[in-house]
Length: 236
Image (cartoon, rainbow, N blue to C red):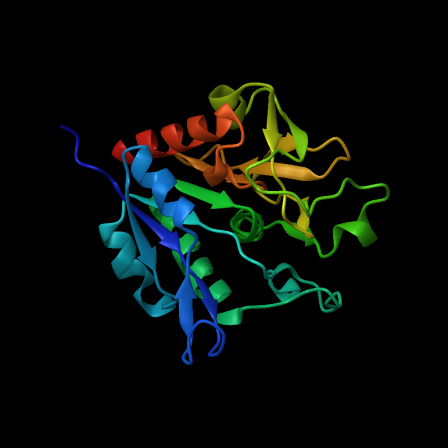
């Protein structure tokens, strides 16, 4: 029996108040369930950038998760910050350390929603800070229905790794007000009908894919295929 590859997932963080009187971490249960259901062994990564390399020494793959916050525009060279932008600086610092270390090691990486946006920035890309202000006649990218339901279709671009995994089209959920503007060193692999970039990848890496939607909800058969391909790469 194959040993399960150890997959690190980045945590979200909240300040004291609400669930706890002290600062606390959070991670939706279906993130870890998706990894374990497809043969991985999920572990959570605290926001300690100084220990990123030691964690990576033990990991076989990295998933950068999403969250209700944004990448600091200063990280992609913009001095002005849109009024809707909300930051979690410690989380972003730690996730960047994990991402950059994983890329140096050619470790399999999957970026989800905000994790895809941070991956784009780590690869030299830029972001639209607020889709409604940046893209005329954009689709509604923050759905009000359950994330277990699709919101729109995504066209997968031929010639990409993602196309080889999932085929030409997927149904996707959506929960974001920012999007990749320029992919930097990465390649665009998925687009919404309004032109919003829905996925990127780095073909120079063993497995390095970012998707704007949340495949852990398994809205489309392609979502499971993404996890299967990612876990398979972590076995190599």
